[in-house]
Image 1 (cartoon, rainbow, N blue to C red):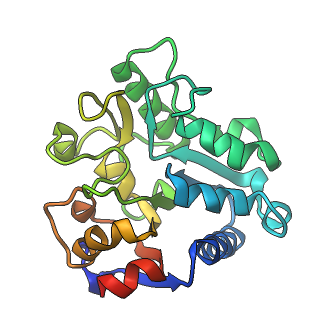
Image 2 (cartoon, rainbow, N blue to C red):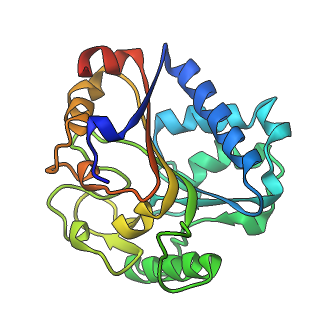
Amino acid sequence: MTLTGASIKLEVSSNPGALADRVAAWLLDLALAKTGAFSIALSGGSTPKALYQRLAQPPYRDAFPWARTHLFWGDERFVPHGDPLSNYRMVDEALISDVPIPAANIHAVGTEGLTPEEAARAYERDLKSFYGDDSLDAARPLFEVTLLGLGPDGHTASLFPNTDVLKERDHWVAAVIGAKSEARITLTYPALESSRNTAFLVEGAEKRAIFARLLAGDQSLPAGRLRPEGTLHAFVDDDIIEHAA
């Protein structure tokens, strides 16, 4: 499956608040329908933050099966967890600190006492341990849900244009150095694609043009090169779709 408008299940909400409500309800339905572990690869950014805050409130806080939910990060800035730039810190403040999820189910990227390359290798070991195998099987996805953002340059997770990580098909996790001021740890295409449901969360007028290119299947965008194994969704607000159609 490639990213084209025809292959994306598109849902449009009237505003950012309604978008957060819709995705929270969608996640809850998926989690309740699944038996056993429910694994989510989280995205950073303001749009997912509103979703996480919504999940930490009633009715989702009380209805979600937190005891069997496992949280992973699609990417992380190589900063301490307490740093304002940390994706872990954002999720912790918006969600984790307010819901009864077991500490063992929180799979944060280690960023202290390691080099970026060591951190990437350690996180790959964590993923493989959770998955129970060193090789991904298309019939048994790594994640139930992968949440993704879309950058103004077409990046998703920390897969930035013109970086070597775009060619990585063997490792599940990689360090990205030099693309931004701080190093990043990111899941690579194989790990991101191994998901039963993949969802782009996009809102705001500044994302109109880049989302239109994504819908058109622009393979020059890192996000456009993603080939999910499961169902691909895009949850957007009116401000995006009115101008992207």
